[in-house]
Image (tube, rainbow, N blue to C red):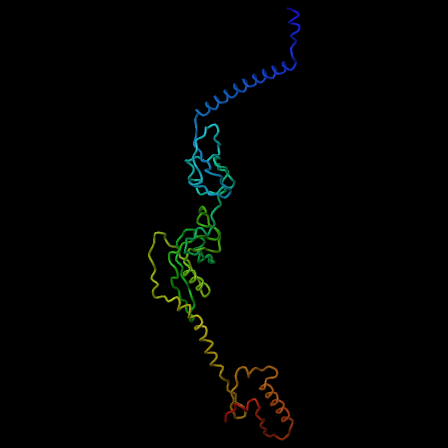
Length: 325
């Protein structure tokens, strides 16, 4: 019996196969146990508190605008929700914003993924069809620096016509958009601010009128109570006529002076001649000046004679053409 057992020697190859099978079975049991524990843990987490977050419906590229068509709401475990995730109750603040980064479909949309908001420019304060016009001011016509953005003012124009000052209302109930570089959106501190310009809210036609008057006269601002809607009567003022009178008023003195230049009478040797002011210019080379020098020289030569005699100098050629008996 012992001899037969000694003859049954284990095969080396069979031993290796049995060892591998045992190790594989052990690994399978360990993996099964791990997966079971993991599934139980996930199920426990899922059964915990959840929270709704905003996620992308599809892949969104950089520059995409957030809207109800591009995002969706998904419930995720609270433990896995990002602290910067956009929640449905806050989506109104994010709607219309632009993405600064690309977002995969199903991925939570975070606040840092949005582009930073830029402060609107001053042009956005000007309504469609209106114009913002800046006019220079001084201490008098800016109400001693007491104008504030948002105030309502009247503009009076002063023009000089035929030596008289004409003052009339130019614009009424005009809104002040800015004083200097301080616009209505800036907080009011109550302190006086120095500025040299005022920006007004006008129509294109009103801006044209202000430019025309500013070139020919002076503009003064009058502060108005915001509740005062009373209009000043200016039906008797013809602005276009006043502005059109400027060339004619300046031309009248020139016409009068032109009439005076018709001629200057000159008496010489019992005869009369007329010369223009240009001909009376006593500059070098002037015909009249040359004639006067000749007369002077002739009188000097006659004064050397002992016997007095009367000599009549000939009339200069320049004077003969216009002489009158």
